[in-house]
Image (tube, rainbow, N blue to C red; front, top):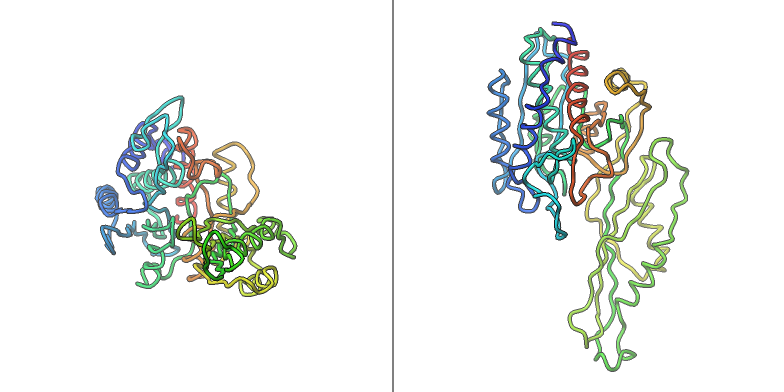
Length: 382
């Protein structure tokens, strides 16, 4: 079957219904509880001849592996997406966040962009590859995880369990607006702690206010620039203040304050050196603890895999693409780094739509993504 015949198997209405099912199965993290959706997707892929393995962990959580075997088992292309979403937030939506409402050519709902839209496109691509009965040499491996939005726990478990050995290419469907991203920044999360001494609120000079010390430091952080040259694909590093907590009651001078910093670094940067810079910035008045460290990923744009991705996206969208990079992290930080494989990120939704109120994905782009994933798999694995 030629490529156009394979692509003709992608039905728009069926792809929309598939995404609606994913959105209507709530997997907001916390509490996540992704396992029912893991099992449903596994059962769906079994119908098309995939060898399916559901890997439960924790409280109703789990990963999914589904393999469509080729004649030689080499190369192996991994389709990666995550089941969990962030919660819908406190602001009211114009559409039920778990309805999958279709309006004006878009599908609305929590996760439509990040990243159940990408997941639906990958499932549809995997389905049509299987239905085409095309004899492939390599394996197509679905590796969908739980817990990516917080700590990539699902991806970590796949690596710990040695479930992704001997893979060759990693394709991730996080939102990119159908751009091809080959690099992502380090996500370096740090807790800053200031300490002081309590006193009665009416006698502030008798104590040492830990919040005042933190405010002094955070005012410096706002204007802090790291002395590093911009990356050609990732630009400059960044630092954002995520949380600030201090004090117990209004009339007691607080003796402790904590702030959490979300720092995004370039591949060339050493996190230990950044902590030293922060210590100097605070004049040694602040203690720092590392909360999490997700290493940057960078793939050579001239890699055969990336060239195939760029060519395919340009062909389907009618717009030439250049390799780019993103500030957010993906499961690639765990998988690509652990296995030393090339990574590409391509997803149907716009990057800026991630975690937004009234989150949506454009139906045209959703179907284009399914076509892109189908052709990439067909071209790499035949």
